[in-house]
Length: 112
Image (cartoon, rainbow, N blue to C red):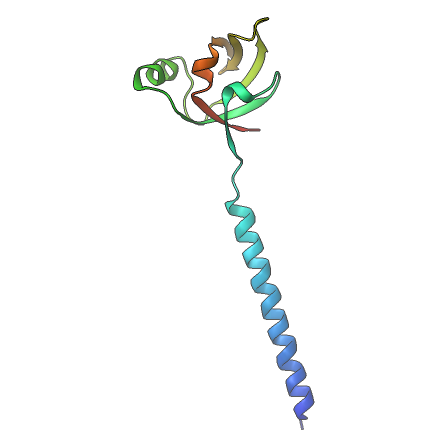
């Protein structure tokens, strides 16, 4: 028959295994919910790539950028900055576009 000690030992092992499984599930859930931080487009460096996450611009400026192809989910790459820093040149959808820094500050991107 089973001794009391072996039953207690088995219960402790099962409890320990259950706790480890719960910990692994919590760790997996935390890793899945961590998203890349959003930064303004102007904060990307030369040759850095990002994906547009949203806009913090007035409706008229946002509409203008949307018409030029800067839509949510689009990948952009910073090509260069002008010698005095403004404007900046980006590559989007296979073409190059120059944006003023005040417009680029209103475009949120996730760094890739």
